[in-house]
Image (cartoon, rainbow, N blue to C red; front, top):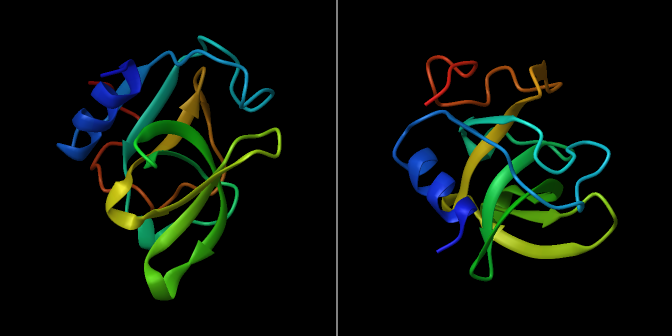
Length: 121
């Protein structure tokens, strides 16, 4: 189980989580080890461009929503370099990125299920 699996578990349990993901697939939106706050999310309210924590084909990613399929209740997940990870169902989207290094992400209002999406756990 990786670090993002643990974060996914906490988000699934309703917690807002602060963590520092590593990797370069989301540069310049998120750089390796920047502080990220993620909150539980209502997947039906997601938009293309939102950054979510989701499981795709057994792996948990902090990546972009690149396409929506509301009729089948699924989203497509991709990194910020053009690689499509694949489609995943709403029940495998655990959280939405609400801040990166203290800067609030755009268009997050009304998407979080957490009462205080700026808090930390």
